[in-house]
Image (tube, rainbow, N blue to C red; front, side, top):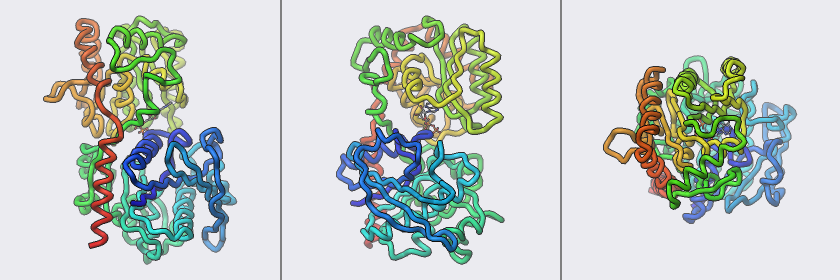
Length: 478
Ligand code: ADP
């Protein structure tokens, strides 16, 4: 089976959030389970050569944009058994010679061009594909390009993964015409006066994957569907929820290079706790306090107001609050910068408003609790990482958080959950968690143990992907 993944992220080369980790974890495990996987992503200028291994110039080819013909080079390399193709686009607007992946005014033409260039590459390769797997709106234009215009490319089935329904790629007829999608072939993308790339892929895909079962159900409702719930309800038969795994090689407290003291689930709890405490060294906070923290993008999805409520409650309880986060929204970033200034002299607060991979690793180890008060959460990796590092999650029960963190239900508890997206619910749940920590260390340790011993690997989810790939590619043969 030949599977081609089209993505904008692949950790650690290019990562903005969970997507990059999903791509590397899934691709590696698919390869282990005998699938021929190829991953195509832009060759961003900022990718460090140390990640790339031996790059081979694979193909030079051109891509039409309006009446221009723009040249590209595809580079190939193998990283940890994954076949990676990095697409260098010699576009006059330097679409991918920037300092980050997303957040530019021309994101729509950038990723539309990427999709069209991938199509040209697949055409030139002329090798049959079993599954063309598109991730999020950035790759979504390939679905109409392939099914409406370039049927000569043999792809048995198109699979669409929705990692976050909020981002859909709204564009104009003009944007689409630039890459050759003309009016007569884009009816399925129309939403009022706009065109919507995710909507198009929902229509054309043979299967749609949401990254957790609860999220798959939630996005069928107006509350979580961001205007595409009706389109999804029409295609409900194609939709499946498969919970993300965790890349256990990237996240392993037993050999994580960012940690001062290593530990694992097999060791006695006293040793684990001592090692976790050691990992607090160097951070400007009292190491004997209770540490609560969040490692997150600061966007409305993640409940920034609820995070602030948590910060205040933790200080009231004389704990320590740590936030590692950055925001693409200037107002949110400014608000947290102001909070940081306000708490500059507090020895109980540490706000690091930047992206810092190494600090993230240290914090997952150093914290007692991780809080994730998301308004919606497709899957969420931070609670999985936290559990693997013996940090107890406190989460709002939604999407993948609901599927992975269990409180007082029939399953073995591994954390704390609440439903109301209100400061009161956050405060109440925090109070409950901190109290148990203080009054019943053995109950807290049981939660830590349960989280650390859970199998979050990609092995099981990958089997579900494989079964789905087989089902949809076989359906094509009948
Ligand atoms: P999302 O994909 O919505 O951002 P996830 O929880 O699925 O959320 O994945 C977030 C990933 O990004 C986790 O690996 C988390 O540790 C990492 N991350 C988020 N913010 C930061 C930051 N400021 N510095 C380092 N890592 C971060």
